[in-house]
Each structure stands twice: as structure tokens, then as C-alpha cells.
Image (cartoon, rainbow, N blue to C red; front, side, top):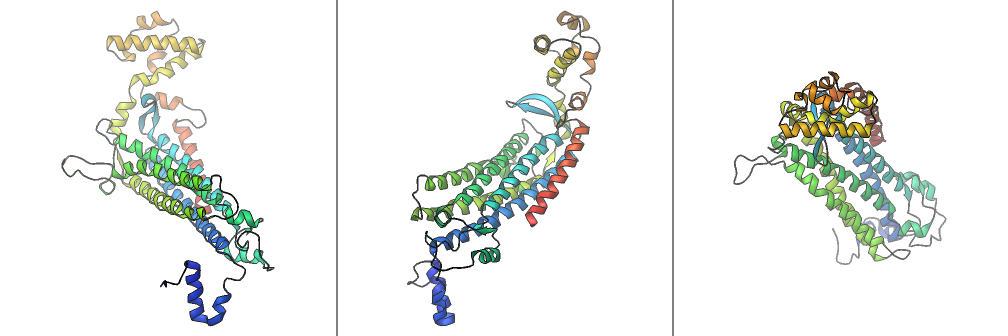
Length: 390
């Protein structure tokens, strides 16, 4: 319990130890400053929460691999500018988030390393009058080494900024996932449906099922980004060494930690219960306009420069749109009017799954490449999970 005479947590601990141990408790502060103690505690906290973040990221990565593998062959439209662009597999699309998270795990690991220098023993700013064994203390506390410069040790919060930077980027990735789930679960898309546990009904409209968790993933990202900005503002142009301004390092850090860990857990849970509508996805992927690039590539294989092929296919698209037909419904005479290189191979490009399987470059969406990607993802996942346990 705190007493009115306690100036801060440090004095409260010293008082309590003195009550328990007598005068020996008064020796606690020898060779210490509140400045280096706070910096040390904060570094320990950042190191631990960085490790925890890697573990939570690993759990979400595992969930993404599981869901991607279960939907590896499900076709869907890929988008650019939120317009249908080319067909991809749902598994390929979901794994895009896996690789974002893999980079996030590396950033949190870097933040953990950034917090591996021990400030304790730096004193208020100039070092101590005592030849303490800082290497032994660092080893006892789990640091890699003592800090090399006492002024930097008490004045720096780079390791906190490193965590907040990693948290900000990770939250941005989660916001993109959340935004897509919100879009996909709408009636207009109808691609997926969140589970009851991660959605809610309306207080007035009984037909509604709102994707609450996904919406909050969107909203939490700017909050976490503002935590980074807040601390950057505190540190901006701050003279060395310690100033009371540095007391403002904890609120943004604690806020970001709490919200990021909540977001990672929510995203993992949300993906566990989500269901996808294969028929709706496939119907959207069968839009023949999505094969336009394949048509241009067909002409390129027959010797036409791509820029010219691009124009030919544009003419075919306009002809189909103006006549209210699909591209596959254009006659051979109409094809010949645009290019004498177009033959029956033109119609073969519209076969179901043909476009996806043609994307055979490394990292592409074809079944063979997706299988390779899943294998690589499992290897990366093991490494991330192991680092979270180290």
C-alpha cells in the first residue's frame, strides 16, 4: 500500500523494504537513479511484449495457412483500384497477409533486440562512483549487454519507438484484412460471413449481421499509429539527458501494447469461424473481362508487340460491351476484324480455371506455385514460432 509520504514507486519500495529489513533497506538506492531504473524496467517490458507479439503474430500466421490451404483451389477475382482485375485463388489472396505478418514478426524481433542493452548502472546521466559488475547484472536480468554510454542509456527511448513502429505497421496490415472482410461480408459482395462470435446484430434492424471485429481492426490502426506519433513528438528536439518529458513514454506504449495484442487475438479468432461462399466467389471470378491480359499475352505469343496487343484487346472489350455480349460470344469473323492472329485458341482462354493456372511464375497464383508457397510458409512459420519461445 502506498503512503502519503511516498514520492513515487521507488520511494514506496525503499520504504517497504526498510520496514521489513530495517536499515539495510536504505542501501537499496546505492548506485542507482530513478532515471536508469525506469529505463531498465521499460526495456524489460518492451523485450517481453515484443516476444509476446511475435507469438501472437505466429498464431495468426498459422490460422492464415490453415484457411488458405482449405481454400487453395477456390477461385475469386483479384482487384486493383477495387475493380475486378484478374482471377486468383482465395488461398493465394489470404497468403498475402501471411507474408505481411512474416515481416511484422521480424520487426518485433528487431524491437526486442533493440531493448537488449541494459541501462541500469548508468546513474542519473554520468555513470556511477562504484565499480559495479554491469555485465553480471545484465546477464542476471536477461540483457545482451550493458549500455555503452550512460547519457544515451537514460535519455533514449529508441527501443520503445521500435516497438511502436512495428506495432503501427502490423496494425495497418490488420486494418487491411479487416477492411476486406467488411467488404466481402456485405450483401453486394457476399463472399464471406463472419461467425456469430465476431459479429453483432442491429438494435433496430433484425436482419443485420455486422462484422464488428473486422470493423474494429480498421479503427484500431490509426489509434496505434497515433501512439507512435505521440512519443515521436515527445522525443523531438529533446535536449540530453533526462527530462520529465520522458514520463510521457508509457501511456502511448501501454496503449499500443494493449490494443495490438487485442487486435491480433481478435483477427485469429475471427478467421477461425469465418465461412466463404464458393459459388459467389466463383461467379465473380468467371467475369470474362478478367481474361483481358491473357488475351493480350496470347497475341504476344503469336508475335505481336504487347502495346499493339493491348490495343487489339481493348477493341474486343469495347465490341463486347457495346453489343451486350461476353467476350467468348464474339464470332470468328469479328475476331478476324481486329486481328488475323486470333483463332480458336482465343476461345480456349475462357475455360474455367485457365487464367489462374496460367500464372505460373514464381509467387504466382497457379496451383503448383501456391503449393510451393504453402510449403515455404510452413517453414517460415516454424522459425517464427521458435523465435517466440526463445
